[in-house]
Image 1 (spheres, one colour):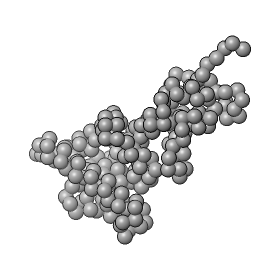
Image 2 (image 1 turned 30 degrees about the horizontal axis):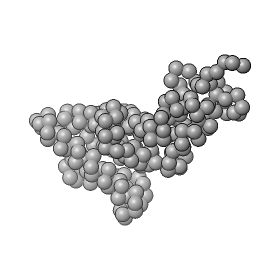
Image 3 (image 1 turned 30 degrees about the vertical axis):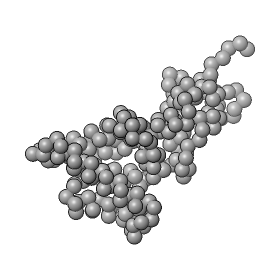
Image 4 (image 1 turned 120 degrees about the vertical axis):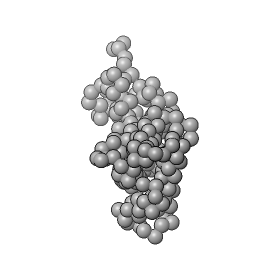
Length: 198
């Protein structure tokens, strides 16, 4: 017909119901990728595969994600954004509550959590979403340790994060004798408390 818009769904695709506008395609792609992880898949599709699932041309999706690595980075960023929401929902906000939220997220979103920490260090710590999570934790720890220096707060945050993440990974690979997820999560939080980190 001489008219083309790559952000519109392909007419031949049954899944196509309406065009994506104003960045909606990127959000839809990230949402679809997160849904795959929640459904039990351990890896993300390629950009072409995801485009087909969404009913758009691969060229449309490549405008938002240059390759699968870019898609993974975007999904990891969404994971940290979701984690930040869980942490800020804790009332009152205490070190124990935010770390409980962190641990609960790891168990509830295991595939997404794994992807979040599969990124390279530059991508992991450079993303605004992951920095937001660290800021939330740092601010809560600082508010409950008003006499602590910035360095002391930082060290406590890193220690709590490292212990929580490390113990979760030990559970994930079967190295902990506590196998039931809820009990394992409680065990991890208990270890943080016993170490006087929360």
